[in-house]
Image 1: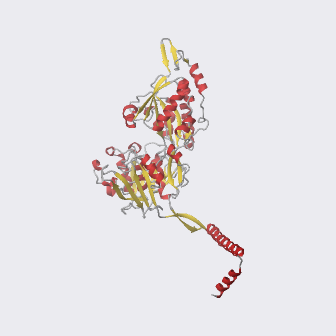
Image 2: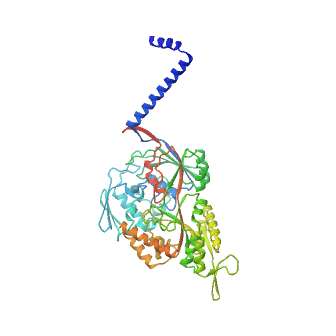
Length: 563
């Protein structure tokens, strides 16, 4: 008590200036002590992820079948499957795979046998233990044609046998370049699905109340008064065999990307599935928002139907390629958010050729090529034509594309570029479902703007082998080349990375020579989230939905621990 009286008397003797200086000194001392404490704290401790928090995620595609065997072409379903189920291996975000349910995988020298040792003490959400029986059962569903699994073609020739409670063996007839990657298929619980009839497989309640071994469990499904699904709520699986940090994930289902974007900007959701390049540009000054770019193995291209006599001429196609200002397309259509390419493989993927993918826009050279081929504008109508006897061939064809604002803008730029060359282009814009039904199956088009997605370890067999030119294949240019076929067949059945890379170089050289397609760009997959969510950005996956295999590494809360 006496000490405070003494301080009070002393303070009373201070002048105003001395009081101000003393107070300032006191504040500076306290501030310095705080900074010193923070410095010491930072030196001896480190921030680590902690459990807790809720993530509100906005999508606009309605999931109907959260079933890893049955789900087809629905990204949101795949994202949910990756949150709820687990595979023997999983993507690591760096272009490779790591063990997940598998403790160890032993591959024979011929790479036709894969013995998998499963981790012990892994349980489904209903507390049933995962065993080899569940893996054998899941593969049997995939291989049964009655279930119409999209994975059927990958596993139809695969034999799987149980070697023990936690051991299985996969056997394939011949070596396949990507079979190891297929082991990321998700495992379903035999005890829940084995007595469900085939005709109920896609409609059973378990499709919307799934039970897996993954980091999250569905606990609430909400519909509006019209019966439309509006949200799914998931909670952290506390018995998950690895760590997961975020406690709750609410998936909000909007009517459109525009509705989801408005909600995101208002802060009603923390993360949006995808942003258009235009939307991303609108967010550039929003400091609270992180923009995530995911590099995917895909491309946009103009597929030139080789059944068309005009477009089956390599030199004409080369001229058409050189006449396109691809960088302008990237800047105007994708707001700079794409990589310019002239061949299918983009950077960060096996077989990328930097020399082949330089910007080679050269309108004058394109004109020279056509002139050397005998094309000229003899009647001053702005259209090049070639005369051979009584036959006149005009530089004119139709360009088919799906009804999509970005692709329509892209097509308008192509039409303008080719107009400067002396070509006349007729745009055919059709809804996506009509494109598949009325055009792709029959290859009924001259040229087509479309996108294709390959895999992290590129196997281009399905896209460019001559066996894939019919309605079931993905060779959209109807391109046939026996030399190319031989190289594609080797790459389809080898795991020798040096051989694969060498062969991909040769494949691209052949495509560059014949130009059955004009490759334009690889657009970045863009999504956004508020900075309270901690996610590793700029990763490489087969698809954006694959990034959800690592959702157990995402976090909101943090805590300090000793170093």
